[in-house]
Image 1: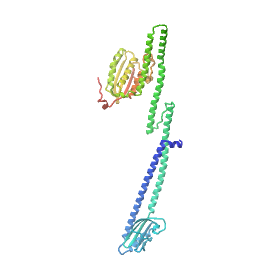
Image 2: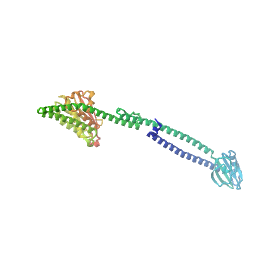
Image 3: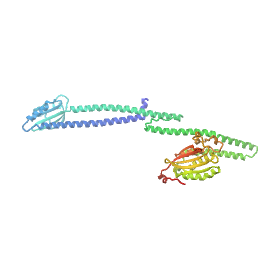
Image 4: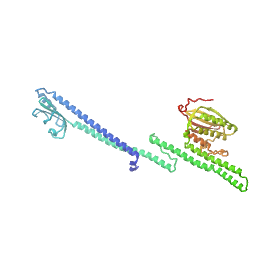
Length: 464
């Protein structure tokens, strides 16, 4: 990955931004810690200075300076001027004890240097000046220990800051490269899709992070896009194939009508055939348009709480006589109250298409069974028959537009009935499947049930 491209990438900029914020926060908190440590060490040094001053002062008694002088000289003998300063002077400023001659300094606590008290070097001291009777006592401790401690802390902090900066930059670049690589895979996949490779998918790392979530959602959208495009291709091919025959038939009928008209023969029968053929072609296109509208979700605004059991009862009543005329039986084996969120008219159309499909493609003596039951918080609507069924390899294909089994091509119909059923099921977030009924076929549709508070119903119970 080129450096210029890396610098322009959003992950790198985010990594650098958070890295800078982290480093600034670290330095700021480190500076606060350093100043608090320094103040604490200086406070401890000043406390030690007060205790030393009090200890020396305790050796003094009025008009008796010998103990005071000896005590001060003992302390001074164990330390050089670079470590600590001790001085006892009389009212005239003459040195009585200690390791240096203190200048005249008012009482108080000061921070001084060696040059301030007439000594060589560049040492710093914390000094306390106090009066003991007619004498002036000066006690000072060097800042060496404090400065050394602060120097060690400062050096350690500098090293830590360097490590943090290096880690922030290195880690930021590493994370940015990884994130950018995954984004590049997304870009490559979308580029492949834009060039017609609809089967391309974004690799998923399996980490379950936000990029994986986006990749999964994009892949789902690409899967849907591929399905829709393939469906469009299939529909185009099927329209070209299946409508070619009725259009040719219409053309032949019209040609025959023209020929008979030229011979001054009656053409009314041929014109009726042409009109009927035209009506069938129009009905096919209207069905295709209706499926497209349903797939586009144009009917969702009409959704409301709908009891499928009521729809089942209506279809059973309407088609019982139709099935009887065909020498078949239409029965309801089981039904429960099941409220779903949907369009009642579309649900009625869906169930009617399934029943009509069974009636049209099953022989006399077939028993068509309707059922509605509950399973895992879903309503399972099923239409089963004991007819010839559908080969297992073609059960998914029957939902394609204009698809017809070879044995069904001699019957009337456009091959759009089950496509409409699939479109309505998808609109209602229902799952539809064709299965073996041993013998025959069973079409099952699983609807998500509405919660009881939304459906206005209690627990469902079977009804006779």
